Length: 353
Image (cartoon, rainbow, N blue to C red; front, side):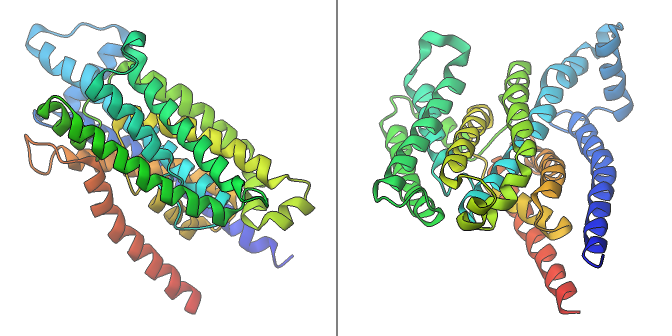
């Protein structure tokens, strides 16, 4: 019975974090609608949302602010919440796959591969024939090709798809994909396009629209459902291939499936907002420090923390030095590193008592 008490306490933390995190997400989302290059009163922002939902009428004097809130800031906030939740969950999955708490999509080369595809579209018009879907198509294909290459190389030495081979292969090929992206930027015929790509590669939600909201919602939503359903298997995988095999789980095949899901989610997210670093690393850590290592709890808490984290970071990115906008990746690192260090220090102190 003694082992049940900590588990019950951890689930109590999960409930508390969801209860606190949901209103926190709503608050930062409202702030995201209010603040920007043009500040809008929160009462007006809520009124515009209500008018949009109910089909109400907005006076001509407020038409410009209405469009800013409904057509620009609202899809940006929603995309930020979805991407934050998705990046956090992908990071959680990758860390379980390779049994390494320092892993994230960059370690396996997934983000770097997606960046290559997206950069080719922006700079050279690759896949222009598919119109508005060129960027997500190229980013997903880049992530998928990177996944296939990493998977094939990691298996080439024999012995199955082990965590160590995945980390070493993904890290090496990730540097290669990043170098290829740099070469593409260097060869770009237009300097302005190259500069915009470099800013985008550091992460930005500036180009989001309602189309990107639906695209991310469908793909990330699908990925979240799959990951939540596989939470028990993630526990087995995180304990080692031998333990997973004793529980009837084929570790190599399961890793391949997780690899594909992670590539799909990462490719779409990179196509929408660029390669935002640090979220996939720090958010699972924060969740783990708060509710323990059981993935059944982590898959509940991680998306909430990720969504709040990225929406708040985007708010800072566009309000710190207005009217200029900072790269979102710089904000996630600047905010996430101190927060992670503080939580880690508190956890160490709690364990020493």
